[in-house]
Amino acid sequence: MINYKGKIVIDFIYDFADSFSQGIARFNNE
Image (tube, rainbow, N blue to C red; front, side, top):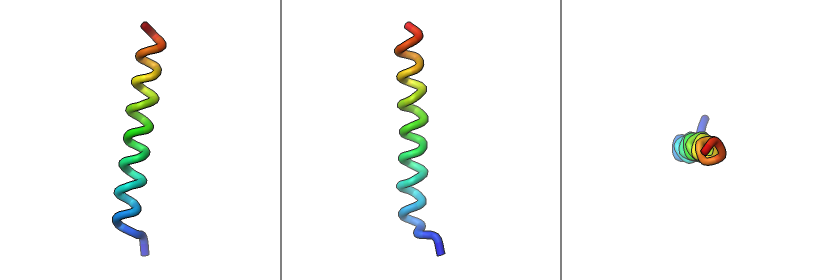
């Protein structure tokens, strides 16, 4: 059985990392 709370944390970390990497790319393009 998947740990529901753990899945939320993982999804949050992946979403944060994706937003962070996009922010870095945007910063480097300027």
